Length: 158
Image (cartoon, rainbow, N blue to C red):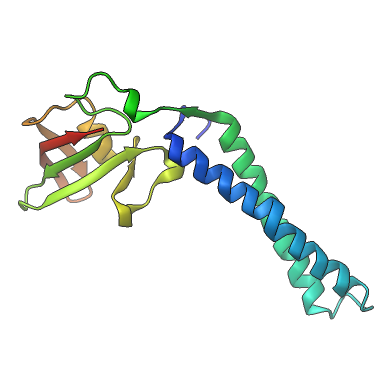
């Protein structure tokens, strides 16, 4: 990830900051209380609360370090500021039709925002790379594990 920019939408950055805050300011203090309480109960080698709590603290700390790095490296791109709205760029919502005549709606977002259940695809994904710079009516080709597939761009929104 370090060899490319960490583009992110304003909402994506808010979500990362929210997750970091939740972990650091709410969840971690609760776990610290449990670990402190469990440590006072004596033998730590057989104390499940203590062992689980310490493990959870390591997980939280690892995730907070990761989020901190991603937030620091973030380059916010606001799709609302896109002036060339007739082409597909980062942040665009695109409706396209595939070879099976299925209409698919995707939004091109940063790597930290991907959620296929919501149609959020990374700007570095094969589909997004095929769509980028396309215009309504264009046929673009995407390479898939099953071979090449043509996508027709039907609509672009920002």
